[in-house]
Image (tube, rainbow, N blue to C red; front, top):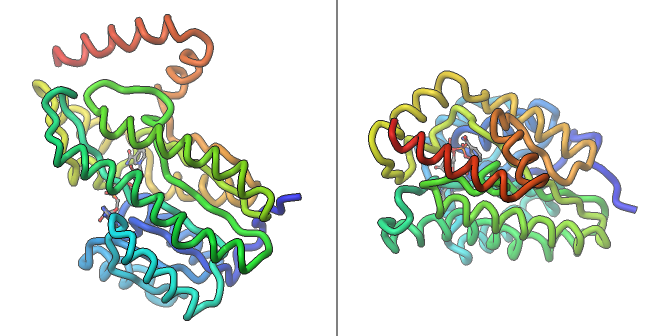
Length: 275
Ligand SMILES: NC(=O)c1ccc[n+]([C@@H]2O[C@H](COP(=O)([O-])OP(=O)(O)OC[C@H]3O[C@@H](n4cnc5c(N)ncnc54)[C@H](O)[C@@H]3O)[C@@H](O)[C@H]2O)c1
């Protein structure tokens, strides 16, 4: 039987991409429950600001690029040396890349795959063997996206990598149940964070600036997503759809009728590219 993680006090948590947005909000939410949180990010200034914000909580920051498998391995060694175990691993770092699919450079494709997919793989390779060895219940959270459930236009590298994270997480969940390790795949819709501002997205017309304004205005708060993530960990939920907005009916429609979904997706793309 796989036990769920109800009491978070003194649990050891590792979160990548924790300098901003969903990762930072989740780090804060875990820290407020008494967990000891390791915040990992590629951006030192963000880590410093996060450490200032979470001053007084049990936190440690680590400047690590999740694309670098060796560096993630060293991170795991360091954390196990310090704390002896990891109860919750959150592979969350992610970047957004998009544009007309035939115009996206190889460099941008590699950046997306390296951060979104390899970053998650590196986290799994570095931590899972140790989590199995330590024994007892543990939990892995992988941040995917609604773009990992429905194929959205003009963000093919993002969708491709997030679909991959969804598949990877499902495999992982099935395999790790035998070791008392649960896996939650988090699929947020639009959340007001830095992901688009930091992204490499080249959309036609005014589409990008309109999307950015809409996300800033109507996107969910990262704190609400963090609360959903904690609830999913506590209940042991395997798929957590959060802040999905209009993408939820689209996903439901896709499951009900792929052909109707395809038609609507094509029409929406035609409409949006005229914006
Ligand atoms: N914001 C949204 O609308 C949304 C929706 C669905 C999924 N997501 C996913 O949520 C996750 C968190 O994104 P966010 O929205 O909070 O964005 P964010 O940009 O606010 O935070 C992402 C963090 O990841 C860090 N990062 C980037 N590359 C890294 C690397 N190579 N190594 C380590 N850290 C790195 C960034 O410095 C940043 O602090 C991502 O996986 C993203 O794809 C976001």
